Image (tube, rainbow, N blue to C red; front, side, top):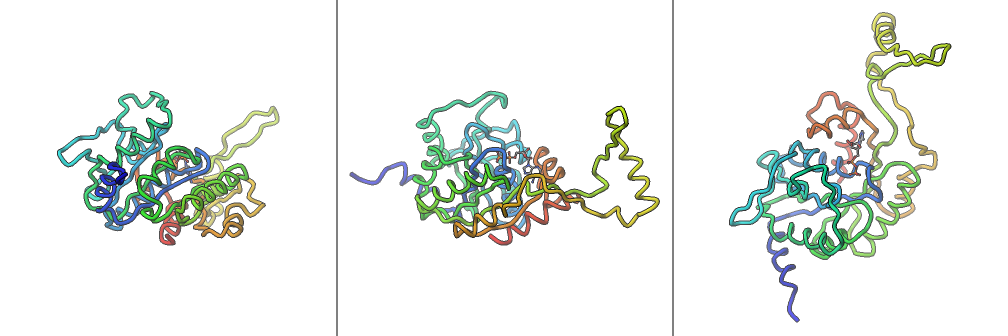
Length: 300
Ligand code: ADP
């Protein structure tokens, strides 16, 4: 029996891609797509040729996070063309194939695997320095499929995104064990939504009245600070949102022998940038999340 013809085609397509990185998470909603999107923006800003492949078939959020909602894929004689944010940042997502973004995609394993295979076979990425693959949460058919198609040795490694909560960390262990089992190197773990940080003057201040009502006194507080204590205006207020007293992701990384890449706080400005499909790195307002993400990306 000869080699699988699909894998031969994929190997030819991937021959022009220098590095392949998987972005994984144990659970949904921890910021995996946000990280994939911002990592791609950052690499593109460093003048690398970048491709972002979204294989989160049941919940593709990458088109929105790159400001490409409603765009469509075009075909040429070379294959399916990615949708370009910039000449050096191309994106492919199942989201481009669904005309109605509110429509649910309910597919069984074999169909998902078929689509992933097709993405890898058909998309013409041209020369890429990095292909960032945004995988669905957990360890399911799609993960096995992507590892089989690219070959464990063909993948440079996986970045795992988590929040500090125990429930998320338990699933990260599973994710690390999956990588070990299939032979994919873990590049490291990112702790996202690690506390809330934002400039103090952006907070809303509430006073409880005697009758139990909430009164917004933000303007009064800001006015007070500006007049009486202007040096406080530049403070960044930080708060632990989730219980990370157990040491969180960093401790787990030590135990499991994988690198800990760093923490990104919950930052309303990052959320806004992601919602609006922008890079947080060129946004002056992302004063807390952008520097944290930059440090993590430089560690890779
Ligand atoms: P996942 O891909 O893990 O399901 P998403 O990347 O879609 O998660 O993130 C879920 C939501 O949380 C999005 O609205 C995103 O903008 C927001 N988000 C992610 N990380 C942060 C952060 N550090 N600060 C603020 N909002 C964030």
